[in-house]
Picture (tube, rainbow, N blue to C red):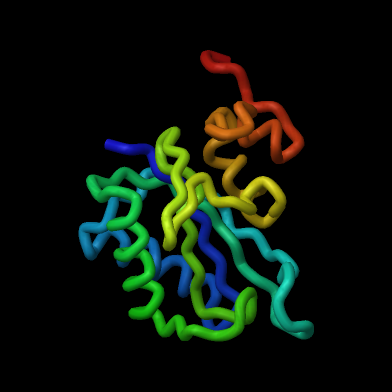
Length: 158
């Protein structure tokens, strides 16, 4: 099964509950099995309109049988089930789920780019992702997630 990492964020409604419900729905709908979840991190909004509330962000590792595009469709369906509405880009949202990494796949389609094109620029992605996957290597940069986040991954076996 592919090793997939997703980023989750919410800054509207019950932010923590929205992230928990999203992870539960990922499993309940058969989209994927949740292998590992980072802690929740409070972050300031990046981009978008001024005055937005803080985000709660997390990262999760998934096992799935779905291909990348199928996984994206399933995750967007879960977002809609939780009340996500299309608003302005980088505006407030009930839940946002992004595919960050899908094994070592590098792809670009009209609807999906893997690895996520801005993940290495965003501490709200790198901090929770490095908590659960510090040694995972970014397939384009060739560096570990931990090194991108500013710390080294622990050596295996130690």
